[in-house]
Structure formats: structure tokens, C-alpha cells
Image (cartoon, rainbow, N blue to C red; front, side, top):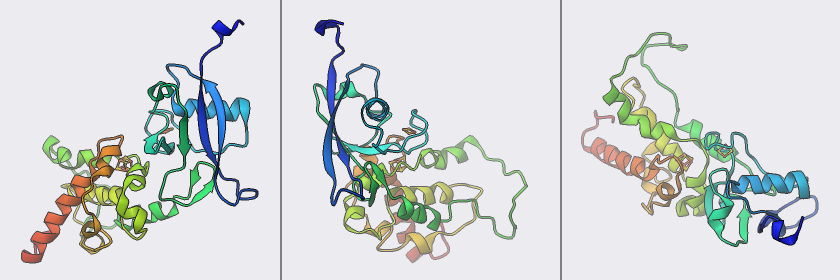
Length: 246
Ligand code: SF4
Ligand code: FES
């Protein structure tokens, strides 16, 4: 193959953290083929398969559904399967773990705190006077579905947490996706639950200062910032109309 036939390459600067040998993260450079149809995740897979099998990162579906491939790409939280090498010109592309989470290894972060926050909002249909498992059919109109559908599109990628200045400063903040998930159930006509105790807190909706970066980076257009502001209104109304829930 002549030089003219060699595929162009782009440099990935990848954060490496191997706790058995690194006291802090260091960057390592890799040159990968610059293919028009390669996502950043494909570049990382090339590194792992061809250049350095010790690199660790999470991924699964490669189609924006599993939410596991989130990383900071040139400083922005992105799904790496939905971000293309060609978007970054001649490079380099700097790839780091999602900001705001403890790093376990290389690009892999600890998601335990996030999972605890999601489960704290009781993200399931709550029916008063009925014991699980629920077997009855609860019909909904298209309008009732539309009331919460947007919030049900979340893929738990954590990009919104990584972009949120409140969460980065205060790890107790319940955070965008968990509040959007609570609203997914609060606004569901089949749900009879009450999540006021989890949401009406300084560490929950009242901690949000409405920067809006969560909504800007969300790859699924969930709009968690809107979910938070809507629940602030609900909580405020409830202080004057204590019997209102939604
Ligand atoms: S709200 Fe959006 S950015 Fe946040 S976890 Fe869900 S899909 Fe990801
Ligand atoms: S690999 Fe599943 S969302 Fe990117």
C-alpha cells in the first residue's frame, strides 16, 4: 500500500487510570483510522482490539439505547456510540470518564450512587389498595400517554449528571434523571403514588439552579430541567393546597 492509499488517522488522547500502577489519571495517545462512519466508540474498540487490550470502557448496544457508553469527549458529556470521529476535524480527540463520578479504571466510573438515586424515587407504578404483582389492565388514552412519554425515554446514561454543576459540587443532589424519572410516574394516570417526601428537598428539586446543561446534553430529549421546574410548581402549589398531588 502506498502512502497515498493509507487511511487518514486521528489521534485519540485517552485518560488511563490503572489503580495498581497510576496514582492519578494520565493521558495516552493512540492513532486510529479516520473513517467517516466510525463513532468515537469504534475508535476505542480499535484501540482495544489492535493497539492496547488493557484499555477499559463500557458499551453494549452501539445504538444509543443501553446508555452505557457515556464519556467526556473534548470536555462534553457524550454517548460515544453517537459521536463520530469525523465531527472532530483533524483531532486530537480527548476522551475522559464522565466528570462527577468516581473512576474505577480508565473510562469506567462507579454508578452505584446514581442507581441508589434512581431507586429512591420509587420508579414503579404505585396503586393504593392493591398488592403486587398487579395483574389488571389499566387502559390509557394517547393524551394520557403523552403526559409522561417524554420522561420515559431516558436511557440512564448519566450525561445529565456529568453536565450538572450542582451535582458535581454536591453529591447529595438527587439530580436530573432521577427527578425526571419521578415525574415519569407522577404524571402517569395509572400511578397513585406520592413522591413529595423525596422531591420536595433542598437536595432535590430546590437544589436545582436551572442552568439547563442537563437538558442541553441529553441525547434522548428527555428535558430533565423542565421536569424539575414542573415539580417545583407542584410542590409550591401543594404548600397552599395540601390535598393536591400532581
Ligand atoms: S435524562 Fe437524558 S442525559 Fe440524563 S440519564 Fe436520561 S437520557 Fe441520559
Ligand atoms: S453503546 Fe449503548 S448507548 Fe452507546
